[in-house]
Length: 316
Image (cartoon, rainbow, N blue to C red; front, side, top):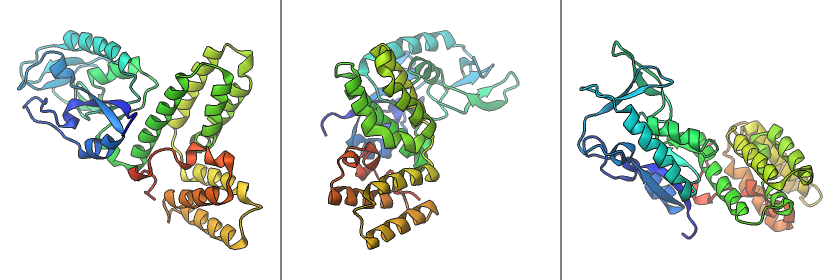
C-alpha cells in the first residue's frame, strides 16, 4: 500500500528480541492487520539508551510524579541516563512526522499509564508513566497514543485508529498553502465526524473557521488543530452517532420511498438500542448516498473514516 501512515511502536511489539531476557512481545494485530496500512518506526528505550541484552530488569521507584528509573536487584539509579536519552530521542522523532505511537504496557520505560511505582518499603502502586512515554507525550501533546493491551478493547481501538487517519488527512492539508479555502475544505469534509465526537467542539471549530479571515492564518490553523485533536479524543457515543445518522437521513427526506424510510428508521432504532453495530446503518446510508447522488455526503469522512477491512465499526 502506498503512502502508509507512519507511527511509532515499541520495538518488542514488532517482534524484535529486545526485552531484558532477549525475548519479544510480538503483537500480530499490530504487524498483521495494522501493518497493511501503517509504517512503523520502532523504538526500544532501554536498548537504544545503551543497556545490553540480556540485562537486569528495571523498575520505577519513589514519587509517581517524578520516579527514579532503577535496576530491580542492584538498585542502581539510571534516571539521568534514561531521561537524557529520552529527551534526545523525542527531538529526533520530530523528523519522522509521526501520526501516533503504540507503547508497551507496564514497562518502566514505555508504559503509558498505570505503571508500577515502588515505595521505600517495596510496595507497588500503579500510578506511574514510563520514562520515555512521559517524555514523548510532553513533547508531542497532540499525537494519538495508546498501549497495545488497550487496543483489544474495540471502542478504544476504533478511537485511536480513527485519530491516526484523521491526523494523516490533516497533515496532508498542511502540505498545501495555508489559506482559509483549504481549511474550509477540510472542515467541510470532517463536519459530521467531529459532530459525532463533540457537538461542543463542532460549534467552536465552525465559529473559528467562520471568523478565521479576521485572524492570522497560522494562528487559525494552530487553534483548529488543537480543537480537532481534543474533539477526536472524546468518545463518539451511540447517542451522538444516532444524532449524526439522523442528520444524514434528513438529506434524503424527499428521495427515500416509504419502504426505504421505514427500513432506515428501523435500522437506526436497532443501532440505538445496541442490537446492531454502527457499520450497519452506515453501510445503508452509503448505499443511499450512491443511489441518490448526494455530493455533500459523498465527501463526508464520517461515512468512510478508515478502511472497512479494519472492521472498526463492527462492534455493537
